[in-house]
Amino acid sequence: MKSFKGRTVVPGRIAAEALVSHQGLNTLASFQKALQFGDKEATCGDQNNPDLYGKKMVGKALCLPQTIGSTTGGLVLYCACSMGRQPACMLFSKPIDSLAAAGAILADVWLDDVRMPVVDSLGDEFLDYVKDGMDIIIQEDGTVLVG
Amino acid sequence: MESLEYKMKLTDEQRAILDGSKGETLAKVMESLVRYGELFGATEMVPISSKYNHLVTSFGLKALGPVYELMDKLLEAGAPSGQKFSVDPKPLDKNVPSSFAQDVVFKVFMYSRQKDYEAQLRDLGLLSDNAFTCTCYMDEVGNKPGFGEVLSWSESSAVVYANSVLGARCNRNSGIIDLMGSVIGYVPKFGLLTDEGRKADWIIEVNTTKKPEAQLLGSAIGMKVMEDVPYVKGLDKWLGNELDDEACTYLKDFGAATASNGAVGLYHIDGLTPEAVKEGEALIKPDAKTYVIDDAELERVYREYPIIWKDKDAQPKLCFMGCPHMSLQQLKDWTDKVEEGLKKSGAEKVSIPTVFTAAPDVLEAFERTPYADRLRATGVITSYICPLMYMNNPLSEKMPVITSSNKLRTYTSARYYTDDEILEQITAPGNGGGKSVKKAAAEPVKKILASEPAKKIIEGTARGIKEKMKDARSKSDPVFRKKGGW
Image 1 (cartoon, chains in turn orange, yellow):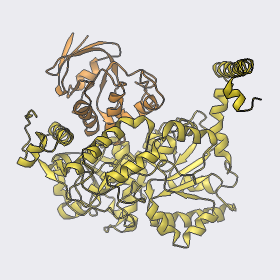
Image 2 (tube, rainbow over the protein chains, first blue to last red):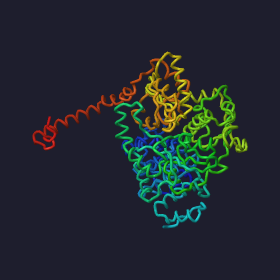
Image 3 (tube, chains in turn cyan, red):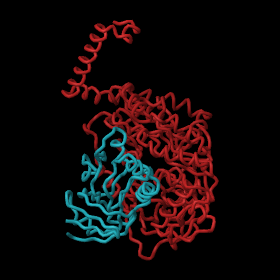
Image 4 (cartoon, each protein chain N blue to C red):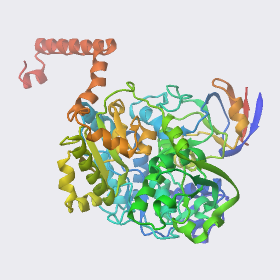
């Protein structure tokens, strides 16, 4: 497996299957329908994101550059976590943006039984290498194994 | 409580709150803000100095239940906002055309918690019942921070305006984080709160042969620089060197496009915005990149917008103007434009149902002018609604809606046109039809009902009802008897 080292935003060890967005994830557009209409698999509803549109996000290792869009982004991510509709983890190639950071931290601080490990600053090479369906293992120190 | 270790320098008071001196809820609020700040290299928490806050979450969306529960926790802990606040626009307004099916989705599936949430906002510190707008900085609304004031705002279009046009200092905060800042009275100092974070990463050279469309220029810059700070040269040629009403309106729309098409939180306009006037090119970082924008570049950006309507040639059924909300002067100018357009085309009223949105206080001021009756006579509707919230309805999403808002284009299926193109379409005779919103929104419902799986469900439900009635008759079901039977 190829190893990438990033910065731990929310610590945790987890293994999951990769789901990759090469463009910024619009959090509101991606999660709103799933949260609204009871889609437990959190099918991505963002028509402007060809990488993710129509794909199930729950339980996946979501690999992305950063999140974009409305400043509701953080609270939408927090709600996804609270309702059990979150990815298994989020892996950012760039330094995390303020909206995703808010969502990840709020979930970690305020929700007792939810843990969504988050690693950022994994580099462009990470996003070039990782493909949908690859196995991902995250370690507590921010090391991400892809294979 | 266990004392948590952070790199950030905290005052004794902040450390005590973090350690639980004011209870577990406030400790968590402080922890959230400290951890949030540390990720971005914040070295300290600084006091908020603006009079009012502005929040993004204005809608009682069923899906956001956990957010309202969290806000309840704050209220239960006796920790409302330390500042009064304005908040983004309301998601519903009966003045805006919608079908019966849309209304059902709005009220039952989407904004079913609106009334409760508005009560919660009042408990938390809502400025007034009129304080629902994304343009809280309008004079009529009165939430207008001063130069250098530190804010805990969210709403990307308001943040970029406050930073750039007013010279206030605010990061692009998420919902909830915005409120937590004013609960605790401090925000982490990083990014756009620092002098270094306000330096420009990009030089934008505007070389167009005419005044560029605000929403198009903002979009081009946003998509190029993303979250960086641009220093724009050549725009003062078109806007002048005074932040008058016309320039501020232009920058409102320009900034919203930079913030939604990218993630810009601050821009400088050479010779016009306060920091650019004060510091000039000293604001530009030595290694800044350059992006040249001419007519061809704007045309390229415009042509590359994806059109996500199923039928790309569909007749528009609704037009939204005012995302972000229009200014008073904008409403007046557009009244003149629509009247002139109708006169030119020979039509009496707009041919596409058209909604101009503005802050409740701005609309009240507009109603006090003679323009209000004139605009009404053209058939244009005014509303305080959030067009984005309207378009988030899956049935609205399937309607062909047009707009000159690049923010609305980015987040929804609405199709972007320039101001002139919008004017031409809405004032053209016989384009679309005044009552077509209900029909347009009903079309997807009809399609769903006509599908095979839906037919089976309907048939099954009808069969079930018949059987239940038969069963009730045979058993003399007391409920059936009470209702009088068939």
